[in-house]
Image 1: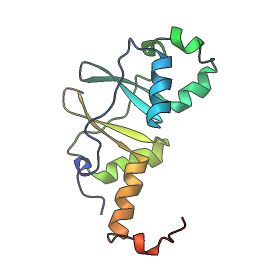
Image 2: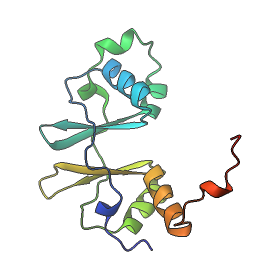
Image 3: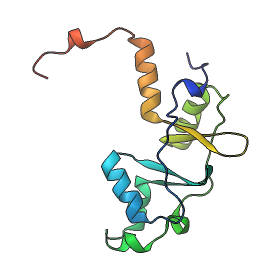
Image 4: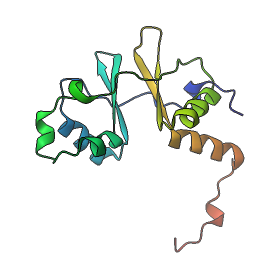
Length: 141
């Protein structure tokens, strides 16, 4: 089941930020979009990642976040996969390193997609339950 390519489940139109933007920008985006991780790119090249966990580590007030550039705090050593990798490789990275997202990059390290733990759960769920299960959900839910 996990032998399909990551391109089958990855998000292709990834919302990103640049290293010159601030932690406040990242916080606002994460709150607005309900994201837990945002890739940081220069042009198209993946240069970093910021996660919701990072905000707990920094312990700064929302006002203080406006003075901190992402380039100062982003994680720069990022595990990424290429589009020709299998979905199983994503699962292995997520489990082994307790990640919740894996960026997908081309040979030039340009960001072409992202796969999250939620994407992987949805993929497996749809494999197991391909039919529409609405008939099992009570009307009052």
